[in-house]
Length: 473
Image (tube, rainbow, N blue to C red; front, side):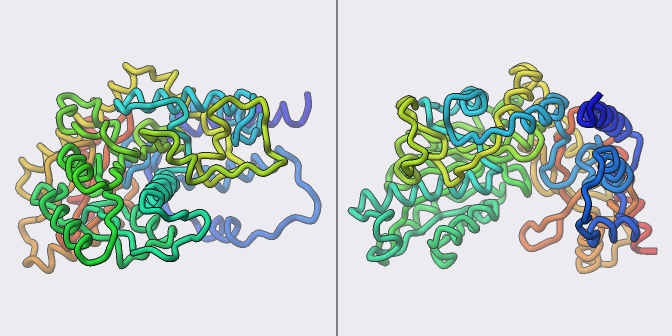
């Protein structure tokens, strides 16, 4: 038996054993001093090491310190456990190791199906070629915003690819106060300037105020600034709120704006019980970002950007040097013509395998299970005297505060809620994170694990109470 075969079988056993042991272990634990030193300070060995030794190092020094997102009581950020099918096929994608820039091979061809399936799940119109997989929603947002920028300037008579960002008025982007930071980062990266990223206020429901959006657009147009893109959220990370997408689509059409929807986390929430009316208008977007590595659990990295018209991204990115010309390519060309990556990994295998394993019915069950638990947690918080619910559970995120009876005023309550996430994490039995709403520190729990139960929600609230007592002792 070859070294690779023997070590690969051992790696498979190690992987399966690790995943099986996760629910009974701590959600998270700090890295020990010796292992931290090994992880950060080891020297490159002069001579190569056997594969078995590498696997031993991973087993003893890496696997004991997970982020925590594989555990059913991990409620932090928007990070899911890995799907079994995605874990299974990841080594096979590595064994093929193709570049999915394009070409006539399985990696590039399967991506067409994976992207189409994602579009079908969320009900987004998908002409062939109008989408590609990315490293995540951050890059998907860059691709979408660059496409929108190219579209806006071409309509104004400027050739952006020839002259760059010179000789035209500033371009304004409109983002909700609850919008994800990747939108602002994309605008900065693309040279649009943070000065021209307009923050649109939200209402008491944490959804974009479309009347305020219209006022900002009109003021810019009158002031020599070109409005060109509005980004709405289909499930914010702070509260899970879904912006009024239909109204925003109307405003975008009235003012000639590119309509982008950030559905990285929440687009799949359209499959929850009774949720479809809340998402009305998402299908009208010019571009939509979503992350299969969030709600679906596709192992990182796997993002996606979808377009209404494939001509837009191709106009923004297509550049085919002579050594990459493919006379056998179909009319769609290569994926590398639709985004900034040339060498692209075989992300499609993990996406395809996860969706094939779940099926549409399994995806719907996952979404409905997790959104149902979020509503249950919101009800538990609302019924408790020592908790305060801050927003309805629109998707699978719950935003709330802990207000023990002995809290010594608002400032003390703020300090406590600011400290609680780290205190809960250190205890190891549950994991949640914090954020800010209206300037106040807030606890937020995101339910994504298919094996999370109502009992786990009770453990979470008990752990918050216990951590609060420790912090105030």
